[in-house]
Image (cartoon, rainbow, N blue to C red; front, side, top):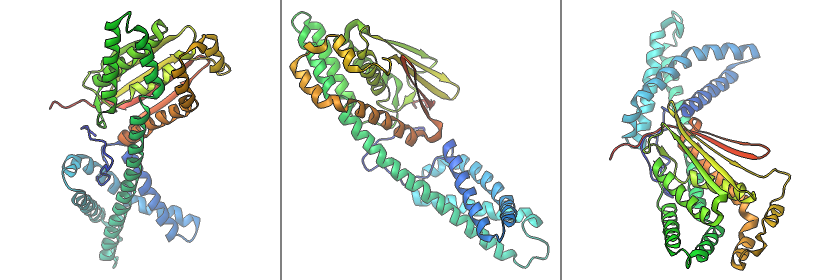
Length: 374
């Protein structure tokens, strides 16, 4: 996952797993040892036999697994250049050769002296290696297909719901309110809105430069500040993170939208959204925190206390249509972020939400990936 890749409807699931990904390695270890445990159960007559069989299988399985993972880690760039079938065949041949080499190198450890089943054992272990490779490839291929479908659904949801109708009408109303008194500001606001739509609806990649996401987010905040004024403030803290660092597209803006509509907008005095981006070793840490109302306080009471009953009839009609689904749409947007992180980074990414009496905090940890010069 070093290069940006296009998110397409027909994403290619037929690619080898990333053997340099910690999540992939853990899944291989779990599946392989699970198959070994199943074999130990099938060969046993008692529970004591299960433990003995498992130990016997592990004596060959452990060195084969470790050496295979190490060699596949080294050969990953070369395997990525091959078509799927050729790379899968190369991986299988590699594992079979390693299995037979370790079996022969182990000597008496795996084949007692005078055993007449030497060649039978070689064929058996070779076939077991092929079966295990087939099961692992099938597992990762099915998982990639499922997650690719989820990624496509998430992308459609992003394109349809990211710039929502209530935001569009709120912005238009705000521009109409200043078009005569401040024409320059109204013109700038319309340009910001056009740029925001253009960037949000463009054909996204899996990973985009950080500066692009920050620029889009600042355009979004500028439009919301036009409506909310000094009640909305955003503080950016970027520490040791180059602007050409890569992150998933439309990651910051939906989090900001969540903070505005479910936090700042409901507070009569407004508040400040704190965004911290910093590099921590080989990871990129994003923390976004905003104040929010207490759970016991209803949003309807807060809106009434702010005197929003005079809102324009047009916005009322839009709110009638979208208001009931706002919380549901928000949950779907955040779930989409989780799905994309799972697809792109597996176990190397972490998404954590913490909420308290009067705050809401989202923390995301990603692998640090730097954009390659074109």
